[in-house]
Image (tube, rainbow, N blue to C red; front, side):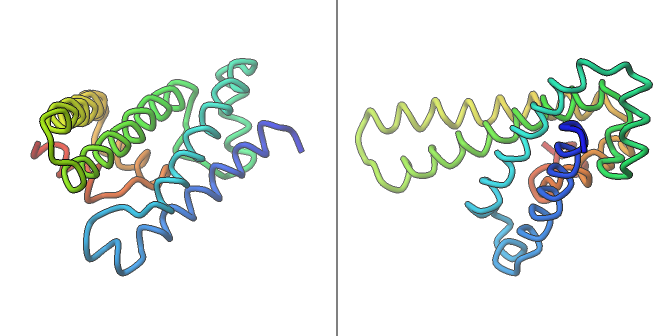
Length: 166
C-alpha cells in the first residue's frame, strides 16, 4: 500500500473518531469541543498537510483516480479542495487554540497584562473565524457542507448557518 493510500485511510479514521467525539453527550449538550477532539483535529490537520505534500507529485487526474479507487475521503474531489481543506483546518485549529488560551486567561489571571493578552487573543480568534468564513462563503453551500462532513468539524462552531449568522 502506498504512502498516499495510508494517508487517505488515516484521514478517514481520524474523521470518524472526531465525529464520534462530537457525538458524546457532554459535547452535544454544552456545544464545546473536548480536548480529545482538539487533539484529533490537530492530527487530522498534520495528516492532511502530509497528504497535500504527497499530492503535489500526482497529476490532477491521478489524484482523483486514487481517491475514487480507495473510496475514502471522497469529499476531496481534486487537489484544490485539498488545499482549501488545509487552509480551513489551519484556521480552525488556530481559532480553537486562541479561544482556549483567552478563556484560560479570563478565568485564571486578573491583572492588566492579562487583560491585554486576553484582548489580543480574542481579536485573533475573531480574525481567524472571519478568515474561515471568507473561504466558506466563496464555496457553494453544498460543497462546503460536504467538506465539513468529510473533515468532521463541529456544526455548532462551523456549520453553514452558524457562519453566515456571524
